[in-house]
Amino acid sequence: MIENKYRGDSMTIRHLRIFNEVAQSGKMSIAAAKFYVSQPTVSQAIKELEDHYGALLFERLSKKLYITEKGRQLLSYSKQVVEQFDYLESKMFEATGYQKLKVGSTITVGSCLTSDILNSYQELNNEVEIYSYINNTHHIEEKILNSELDIGLVEGRVKSPDLVTIPAVDDYLVLVCSADHPFAKKKSFTSKDLAGEKFVMREEGSGTRELFENYLKEQGVSINISMVANCPTAMIRSVIDNHCLAVLSIRLAKEQIENGRIVVIKNRDTTWNRSFSIVYHKNKFISKQMEEFIDLVKKYKYAEIFDRLL
Image (tube, rainbow, N blue to C red):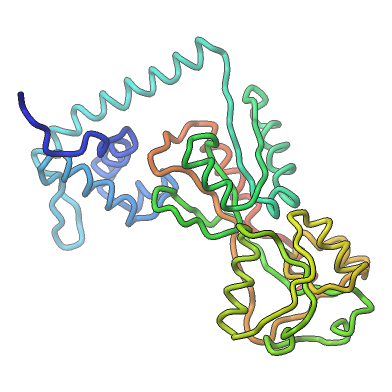
């Protein structure tokens, strides 16, 4: 019996797709763009293949890639494997007549973007049944890792190294208060101004809360958490009715800012720029449905409200 000294799960269809693209284009950057991953991710996939087969697949000379004899041998087989896999996928979906895309969104994203994105997606492809799940970043991450979701759109920092994260949509966190709050007279604030102030905060596991708490920790400032809510509407009501301060996405407060019920106070120390990110498992087969979803999300990258309200 021959013992395989390499891990049995170290080679996937994803590895072969990346290898094929690098071999045919000669550039890792092209493969990275095609599969919506970073160049280091492509480089890692090639290294894992080389480790798996115990052979050098590319020579790297003067910043250029040259496929080796072993690489050409693998390419002749891997193209057939990927083609057969794609044929299998198409026939299975054709046989069932059933296509489903399971999308996860964090609460902030779900409150301001998900409905528009999914409605636009259904207009492009009404043959796909969409399942939408909304929760905080921690729960979305867990469900993608457990294959309960195909893809996610999150505002928080994803911690698992097994997930691919692609910044896709611009966003800004802002400090807001009611129009009759003492802070409303301020044009800007510093971190020291927040010390001891009454805040409504998102729940534990929220990406928005984590970002703000990291800022407070860096600044050495403690606040008074008066209320915790996992619903943006409840947070805004608390700002208006209970005179709490809050830090949330400017996209969530657009209507109330425009009608003057709440006020944005600018941070003199820094800006809380961030992105909503597309997330999926690094070994996930990127289906046509996922590709269409990713392309659609990127069309929402910039929002005109930033120019008007910031």
